[in-house]
Length: 194
Image 1 (cartoon, helix red, strand yellow):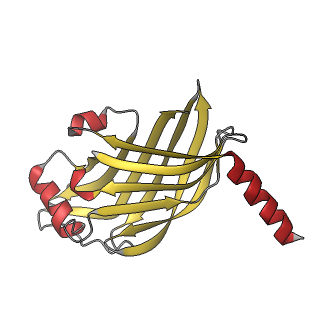
Image 2 (cartoon, rainbow, N blue to C red; image 1 turned 60 degrees about the vertical axis):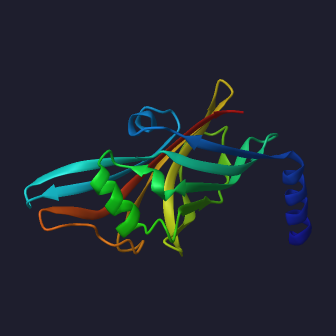
């Protein structure tokens, strides 16, 4: 009986499923910062052991795919691909260290994030989702809080997750005078017309 029910749900979902995909590109740090769809990453830097400040970065090129059940307005199987070389903190020497030392972009040009969902677009409450990320060639689990809703025919998804340098096995780029915290806050916002 369970198998028949699962098959029915799968078939009814595939009947109404539509593939969503989009490539998002910005030409500068400021364009990415001011965009309605954006991927932002934030780390805290402490200088000389005294002054702490946030360092903001944006991804200037990423793509996403997902399946949309148009009848029930349910999004599933979301995948986000981040071009490592387009991660920008508005500081050339810091970006070089990020691309080369931290993320080894020549060996691993993309970070691939997967969130199976389902995300119910007719419901605007925030939910925790389990996902996985392929970063530096290794698959790592993570959790993300996402809220999603529809507004004037537009799908809006936003949320945040916190990753650790150690848990993601990212080399720490800290130097003697500037120490980074282990936490990386990642914020996501995707807007698109359906």
